[in-house]
Image 1 (spheres, rainbow, N blue to C red):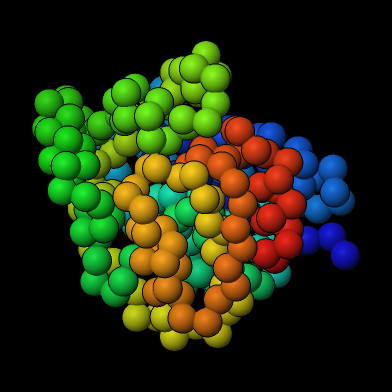
Image 2 (cartoon, rainbow, N blue to C red):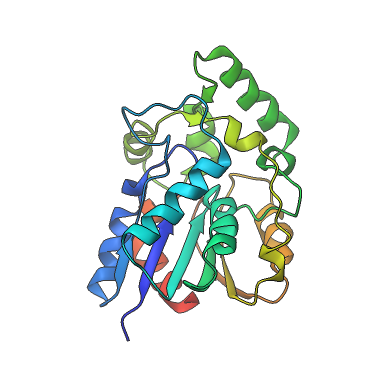
Amino acid sequence: MSKTFVLVHGSWHGGWAWDAVAREISRKGHCPHAPTLVGHGPNVSRAGITHKDCVDSVSAYIRDHQLQDIVLVGHSFGGTVIQKVAEQLDDRIGSVVFVDALVLADGQCVLDNLPAEYVAAFNGLASASPDNTMLVPWEIWRDCFMQDAPELAARTVWEQLTPEPNQVNHDKLDLKRFYSLNVSKSFIYCRQDKALPQGYFHPRMCSRLGVFRLLEMDGSHEVMFTRSTELADKIIEAS
């Protein structure tokens, strides 16, 4: 049976980050969608973008395309977005899948879940920018996000990234409704992910989901580029 997937990207990315995964999902007979969050991607205004704006842009995409019985997938920061989208559109969501994603507790913001050195670096970069945005430094990207790829491949992706509106990382989320939803949840854990210290994604983030299915695979944080076929298979399996 064909399934509908809505793939939500993380910080600095756009819907383009899912291109290779989406091709694999489509090749296997399913229907993938990969919207770009508002305030993300090239040549757009980022000033004043909030977390709610990001959530609303995905919900609007789903409504505009009249999507139903969705497998909602979130990577990294996108995990926090799909938590709120699931609240808004629970009647359209069949299951949610987190790919080494942040899973916030009720009342938390993104920065509450990052190491202190990341918080200081990101806030410092945003404060120095004209529009309160920040971009992950190349050295961190190379060593911690896409360390399993050849340097040229990692740099090619890094050069496509765009600055992240930092307000989205400060907005605290009311997630009481998410944690009351009766929706199937899965978490895909990438064993060589160094974006956050060991134990952050699994078990710290995923354990917040309560009853959920855990799937594991090899790969860094950016598995959509380095292991797109395997990731597509895992997402379909998780659904």
